[in-house]
Image (cartoon, rainbow, N blue to C red; front, side):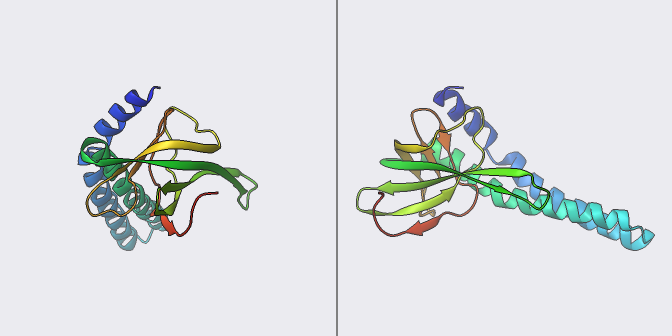
Length: 167
């Protein structure tokens, strides 16, 4: 998928309408299931309510960054910068291997941001340093979307600000 196709897809999917309904819907589902468990005393309802609550938390974590990224593509101020992409792998208790894509973002004379990126759709970034365009929106101090020649990236979690220059 080309960069232009990725931009069009994120702009269309990240409009916010579905994301704004998903979180309250998951919260209401969790509350309803917890009430059903309390009335029926069936522990299955509590388990499903816990899963729905975790889903609501996950939607809250990712949705805001996805909406900001789509907004940054439409109306953000774009500046030149650089991104150093790296991958980190780890195993969980069941020996399943997980991987996260991280990046160090820099701009001339500005602090770095350390980000964990949401899983990029339709392309796999390669490790290394790349020139990038960084999109900023009002009210958010970090870049909400990073555009490289190959594709776009946006944060999965709130980025950490760092001091210094990229190596």
